[in-house]
Picture 1 (cartoon, rainbow, N blue to C red):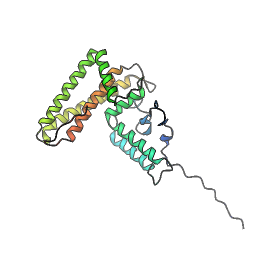
Picture 2: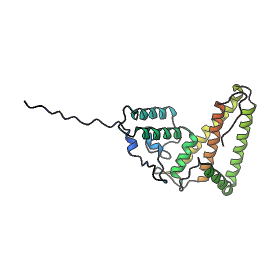
Picture 3: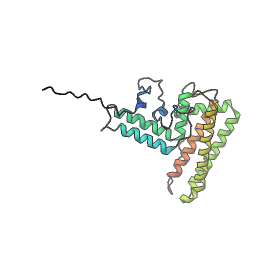
Length: 231
């Protein structure tokens, strides 16, 4: 009696398809992984400027959890730890508006600068103050706002004392993200940034860093606890 051989189709890979399309290499010093491509539901065109700079955090979180579930060690085919770490880095970068913009700059700036590096940021600030008196004044005005926020945090005696500061800072964050979104769209040419004043966008990134730091300081505020705004 002949035995019947049943041909089974191979199971589809559980690996999230977008990871296979990334040019991700830890061996190349010049390689910059586009984190936006990891989340195609939220960034179908590969990220700003082709997509909106302003994100829907709940939607991003949902896609992040889906990807991570597919790379759980119990279900992933291989390299689950590497992929999981990559997805974590991408999510942490994109959910924070400052590091999101820093990533946009690194992907699109002619020199691929990383302004999250202190020395790079200091050099960029020095350059923009030298190149543009207008941006220099805007930077100094921002520093005054930061000092006032620091004083408000230090003098607060209860969380309710920080309500107005929190509302003001949330408004600054919103206005900054809206301005960045508008600037990137104005200079979007086939998904690439063209003819952009990089000093202006770097200043927006520096401001975002301070607004995010103030937001975190408000959340972490405790009576009698020293206030430290990360610079």
